[in-house]
Amino acid sequence: MAKGFVFEVAWPNDPDAASKVRSQFGARRFAFNWTLARVKADMDAKKVDSSHVSVPWNL
Image 1 (cartoon, helix red, strand yellow):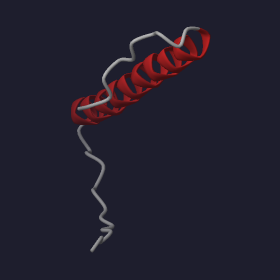
Image 2 (cartoon, helix red, strand yellow):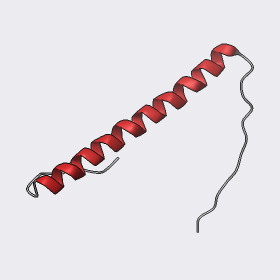
Image 3 (spheres, helix red, strand yellow):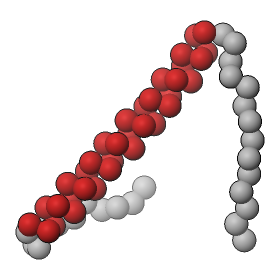
Image 4 (cartoon, one colour):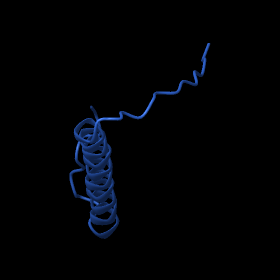
């Protein structure tokens, strides 16, 4: 069974805390884009050379 949850979090009033939250969102996006680029490059290399050993896709 899968359940979805919706929740809201108040944005911090402290400018320093808000800056840290923005930084974390930026780091998350950077990591996602870096990983996506690695996967795409791996898939492209596999298309060019079928003997290419793929990067393991695990956490």
